[in-house]
Amino acid sequence: MEQKLFTNERTLFQKRVNELAGVGTSVDSIDSLIRAQIGCRGDENAKRLVGLYDVLGLDGFFDVLDVTEGQVVYFPTIASIGDAIQSAIAFYHKVVKEKKAATESFVCDEETNPSKIESGVEALSEMVEKSEDKGLVELADIIRRRAAKKPTPKD
Image (cartoon, rainbow, N blue to C red; front, side):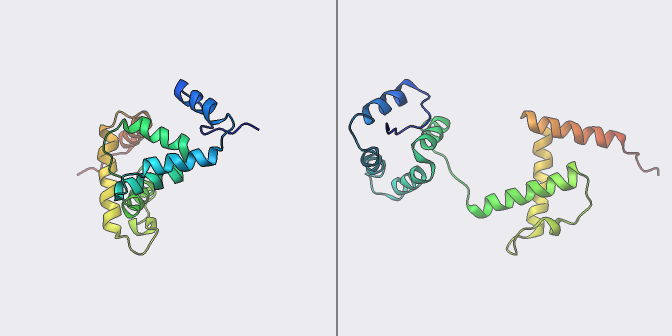
């Protein structure tokens, strides 16, 4: 069985790498050498890149490189992504599904402040209104249609 470094060849470079690596070589040894080359600087950033390579594999690592194109990218912390996920769930249920549940019911852990989730919902509302992303534009249209159907309170 032929061994490959790239499981999903999308470029001529990736195809050529697989051809060269598959000829009487140990893909595991080459993979270890690639990891060593990525981490050769030995600083914290290099160690993080190796960690990212380990998690994603060569194909996924190339996908990230393709998206970032050599630019500096700052990844959020797990806690901030957790807040973003909880805000998205709260937004969906409160705004899209029109459920009247309190923000506290959308908090998934004891460390998260419900007011942080509520401010995330408000920020999402503004972002959805201004977005040109197809999925978000559809959400904004749903929200606008619902708002147009609601009777306004009379003074």
